[in-house]
Amino acid sequence: MPSISSVFSADGLLARTIDGFVPRDAQTEMAKAVKTALDKKQSLIVEAGTGTGKTFAYLAPALMGKGKAIVSTGTKNLQEQLYHRDLPLVKKALGSLRKTALLKGRANYLCLHRLSQHGGNSTLLEKETLDQLSAVKTWSTTTKTGDMGELKTLPEDARVLPLVTSTVDNCLGRDCPDYEDCYLVKARRNALDADVIVVNHHLFFADMALKDTGFGELVPEADAVIFDEAHQIPDIASDYFGEALSTRQLSEMAKDITLLFRTVLKDAGQLDKAADKCRIVAADLRLLFPETPQRGNWVEAMEREDVQTQISRLADALGVLHEVCKLNIGRDKDLDNLYERIVQAREQLDAFRNTTQTGVSLWYETSPRHLVLHLTPLSIAVKFRRFISDPPRGWVFTSATLMVDDGFEHFQRRMGLEDATTLGLDSPFDYQKQAVLCVPRYLPEPNSFQLKQTLLETAKSLIKASRGRCFLLFTSHAMLKEIAGKLADEVDNPLLVQGTTTKQALLAEYLADEKAVLLGTGAFWEGVDVRGSDLVCVMIDKLPFASPDDPLLQARMEDVKKRGANPFAAIQIPQAVITLKQGAGRLIRDPGDKGVLVICDNRLVTKPYAKTFLASLPDMRRTRSIGEVEAFLSEIE
Image 1 (cartoon, rainbow, N blue to C red):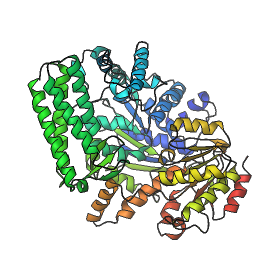
Image 2: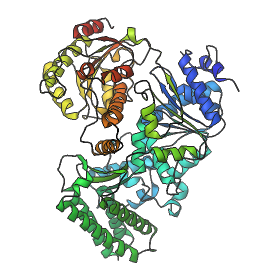
Image 3: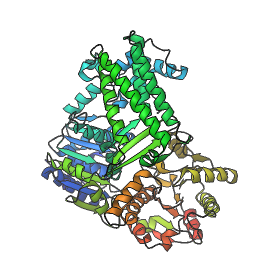
Image 4: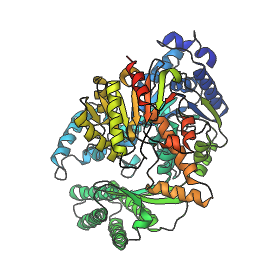
């Protein structure tokens, strides 16, 4: 087996087979550290600045190892890029014969049983959904994988999807008549046979949370686990270690019962009535909250008499449904499965009626049609620490943004990884030459009315100086919409605004037109890779502190206060630093890139915590003059 140093050297295996491969010290150092962690079954946390080449630095050791490795990424797009582009390159270079597999979450695979249930029974569906259903049926006769992503004609949120895919709730498992042909089962078998499996964080944690209940759903037993984009994990893991109950779940359960009543159990009219009652009571619960989607504190909501009354009605309706369903047990496999779902929903509802629990946050969010109740643990550190210590495996957590103030304490504390080895690797880019950071002079206060006008004027002068080719990133949808509306009247450049179409379509349009300007919020702060002179300017409206009325954040801050620490310093600053680093990371992606980062927030100059933010950003040339920025931009080809 060749050593890591020789694989990554100037005349090594990677350089010989990959066009344009240049050895980088930081990449080799990371690859060595990853190999050590995997060999010795230890935990390693690595921040690798943009341009380090971290993907190759963890893929090579994973392919050179002996046991089974799981690589988990932040999004489905990154997952596909890793599996279809990066992994085959490194595998070929190393001459590796290890088997690889791509595994997505259950909702990405066609469920043959659900598809056959919606066979002739079309009276329940609207026309648009029916059209989508016939497209799925046609495709289902030719697909080899059953991966819904192959159906490019379906929108991401197509209404047909929940009807033709399964959930953990409604899957019959081995009792299913289509078990032998099941695409999910086949994908899992492939993964079990493979040596390197590529998943995403949501799938990994959904699986890990189920292992707690003894199911061990999807993620096979592995000797090594590597998380890329690891800064997202604390939030994703918290969701899966908690509980959620939504009115959509109850409404879909009721629809499944109606479908059974109309097809298989035609004498069970009582069952249909009881299910319908549940659906109506759940829908009425949603009506007690404002029409516009929001998040709020569930304990406070439960102090309202109308909410309490409606929750009691829901508990009663579920109780009746439970009794009626019990009478029909054993008549049909799908119904037996529904009985279990009703039992679980009742248990969850009881948890949300107990508003005196400690160590968790009870909160709710509404969508236009539904209400979701969440119970989220305030800390996952204890649970996660237990999980990674047994059985011993190699764990690697890497991202371009994990450090705050030159240290990993924030991430380690949230994850229970105090004993892990840490490694911080700087980006190989020459930021002093390639980039300028500007906090303009004479900025009004972040929450003042004058800020909008300042942002508008700054955006106009930046768009003019960069001739398009810029991202304007905002911390709120309201500000995004307002500035986008005003800019439309004042500049001739095409404006691409988040929310008008999908993220992928917006990016494709942006790359196709060199005068385009992209305006976005959260979704464009990370995971967007625009290289070269296609992006020369990023403007950020203000420091990305999480919204103080977020109920989960409030609960975490209360918890920190109780322990006698300062919640602003312990939670809000570190999270905002990591988000700002992500936004700044959009700018310089290649050794030849040049660009300007403009942050329109005077707190970067006036507040004591400004130095934490500045120390965490790449070492760019700094200025307060927009004139200097315009001059720098005018020199970029």
